[in-house]
Length: 137
Image (cartoon, rainbow, N blue to C red; front, side, top):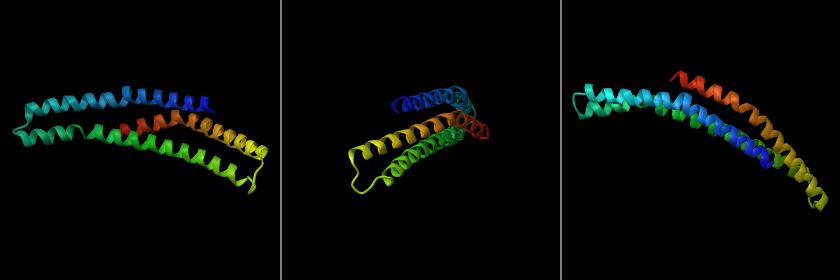
């Protein structure tokens, strides 16, 4: 089960690095160039601040999209694992024997393993969806 968790962690880390390289950095570069141009065009400090703020809006929206989508993914994965625990508990009698507890543990671990597999396979689609959403910013 720990191997599955590690596989998901690595896949999410790879996704995060890809999003940083292909989405975040280009938007940040654009924002920095825009902010630099503000120094040349702003008539006063208030205009400068407004211009710089406007330049960073896409980056802020992109960060919100990424945080929302990754947070939603993690919540769904956690709900799946909690459901496995609940289903396993529901099948136990009021006073389970050691063997019944062990069997329930095995069922729960198998269920969580299935959740992990399912969610790991969703990570490429998650990345694609985030990129598509960020293109529309």
